[in-house]
Amino acid sequence: MAVTYMTADGYKKLVEELNELERIQRPAISKQIAEARDKGDLSENAEYDAAKEAQGMLEMKISLLKETIASARMIDESKINTNEVQILTRVKLKNVKTGQLMSYMIVSESEANLKEGKLSVTTPIAKGLLGKKIGEKATVTVPSGVMEFEVLEISL
Image 1 (spheres, rainbow, N blue to C red):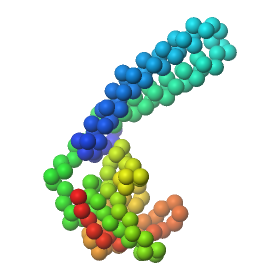
Image 2: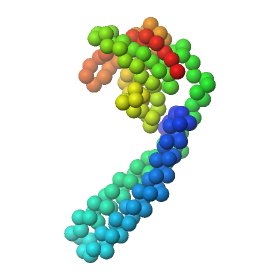
Image 3: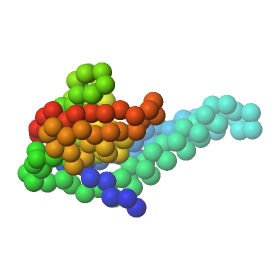
Image 4: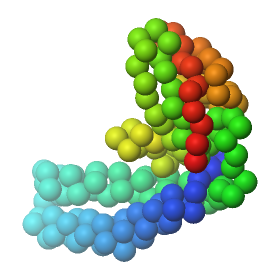
């Protein structure tokens, strides 16, 4: 089982999501299955099949969440420094080729959200940036080719 590093806030969100799935969604799907079963012949009952498939998906999601929570390790945010790019630092970059500026916070996979500028530590860009200092360049291979970034700023 791989260790998942995350903030206390990220951990809390996962636990809340798990509680929602187990306490609200699981009983709701069980009720749908029971209602579909009450309608008779299960061999041609699309509602029953759909409810059973939804149940399988839900149980898989619950299982994955439990695994992530079990392997979670809290990051001591007080020990993070801004000497180099690391998890939970915000990094301001410049695409060397295009001159485009961007800013990302490097976070655990479970906390990633590109709309919020939170980039998963497991992405090629984040992996290429880890350990870099201000002024250093990172050459990163992405699905569309090779990109080069210059680290302009590192903050919390």
